[in-house]
Picture 1: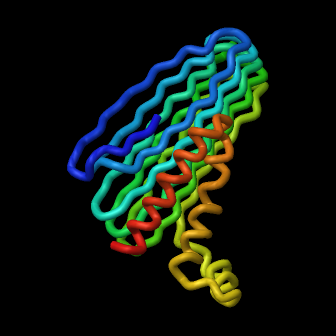
Picture 2: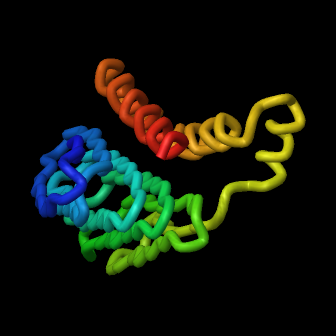
Amino acid sequence: KVQHESAQSAHLAATGLTLGEGSVFEGFQISVGGQLARLETHITLSGENADCTLSAIYLGRAKQHHDITTNMSHAKGHCVSNQIIRGVLDDSARGVFQGKVHVAPDAQKTDGQQMSRALLLSRKAEADAKPELEIYADDVVCSHGSTSGAIDETGLFYLRSRGIPEGPATDLMVIAFLAEAIAEIEDQELAEDVSERLQAWLSRRRNG
């Protein structure tokens, strides 16, 4: 899903999926446009040996508000889910991630992973995360986490010491930060489209 609407718009979307036995779903979302954007995804793994990967990127500037909300429900056992969320925020933009992994009593041997990371390019930018695990089975491997912070000054210094100006050096670090989420896109054409949108966003950031 690509959300790249006008800067004055509000975009509210909800997606619902049910995965049956042995099914595989690989989903990717990118949220770039809109003044207010909320992408909500509800997934139920209703059959054993289902496999779900859900990755998302949000890019915010000015006073944009991006919200990524997910609800991953493991209803049956021997299923795998992995969520990779990455956000980059500049100016006074705000990013929100709300993610829940629910494991039912019958969902033994569940493997549910969830990680959200945000990179703040401005002191006024804000990232809020609310990762949740709700587990009612006792034989599972589940984890969740969230981090947010400014760009790595040591890495930036290293690149600048090699003759790369601050702007392009910052761009390289942003691209590296988002690489894990983009790597989950198996469709090459879609991966190239996402990379082009990222490059355009970085270019606008440098040029105002």
